[in-house]
Image 1 (cartoon, helix red, strand yellow):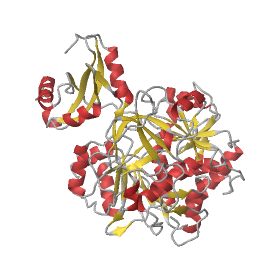
Image 2 (cartoon, one colour):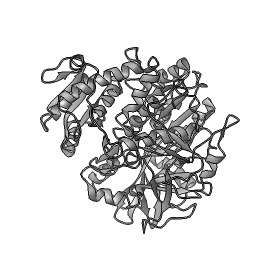
Image 3 (tube, one colour):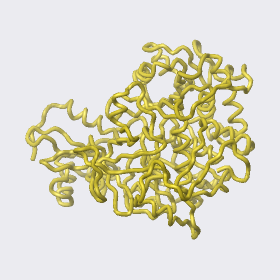
Image 4 (cartoon, helix red, strand yellow):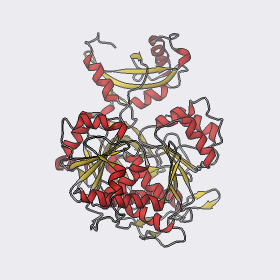
Length: 575
């Protein structure tokens, strides 16, 4: 997206040659050939030659060609930073970190909410040749200590002063030689502002091999156990940014430097981390917040005529249920995307009713940088599909028993993907890497999915979440989508619980709408479900709860509910 100006790197489109990652005659390719948007043809390349560059070249390119464009508008301080300023601060940080010994074979942890300093630090770290390890600010000392211990290469951490008490406790468990604090001066730490003030904007001269060198050591959310380090190279992320960008808009490079985006996705998570690179690649202005305030977000979409809003399902849930939803003009939006978890149809329907814009569900995972599937604005929306694979990404559904046999359209199996964005592997876990990535590059996602005749993909659930009730395989998502049709149900989560009589039973945890609290009983929900669902699907147990437990990145935390059930006294078996 270099506009009319000369870029520091070249992106080469190829409309004729087959992709080296995608097998021929895939059913979704027809959508790319026939793509049209607002009455005009969208030229989607069949494959792309990706530049072999480190990710901070995105920032450098923006600073050289669009130096006075605003990169970040940080709303809590009402402060704007241009692309020239973004790289100026990043260069100073790189010089300072290099002097502290940060370089290749090391990683710097970043423990903060979305701030301009996060972006500056990101490019400062990568310019030393080191990797970035973002850590969710909701994590506690034991979680952070695990990440530091497991990595073995983190001895420097950057955090904000309000979060330092957590790091102080972490330092009681593991050694962190350098803790750099954004904000107030704290004994035993290095003050961020004072550190970079000492250094000129001259990053070290480091040779980076984009296809081999780790750009980000991302620790997964840990929904199924201790988080694992995911090694993403510079090439992984660069390819994912470029492929997902041109899958949305085709080969149109005239959009560079003209867009405004609402940057609410947490950069500590791989979705937000990569999307920030996408915004910078497009030379967009990012409107950044310390937290998620739905009214402020809607107000700013109207005020700044934002073209894009990317969020997780929880954000859309909060927006559509907010009293001010419909009060603000959101007509400037041309793109609304949901990722990181399943977006319920009832939420997307409410969104479209007010905005007249479909929410394009996407799909990805940390191990794929993360985007593999998307639903661009030119693609006809079908139900709760995650859309089609992005450019240079292949996908298939394989039999659960064999793990290799590809299934025909309509059948449910494990989703596997292949492309340039697939991770290098798990940090210090070669056996786990070999289990997850085949010799020919296919990544096991662990997600159950199906593909229809038109090449659209649908996520059915996680393999580990399947409930085995009396020989039937029940997917929690299926039960949840039906329960949400009950007028009293605001949110719900369904899990399998141990049952000595039948092995596993179906239980729903339900958050009631405010007006129904104290006026309806669990048995009434069960009776309604029995009348409205298949005999093997309706939940035999219902429990009202105040809030759905979520992971640090906002995903539904089913494991926590399962552990809670296991900790309770055994109950009488049920039918």
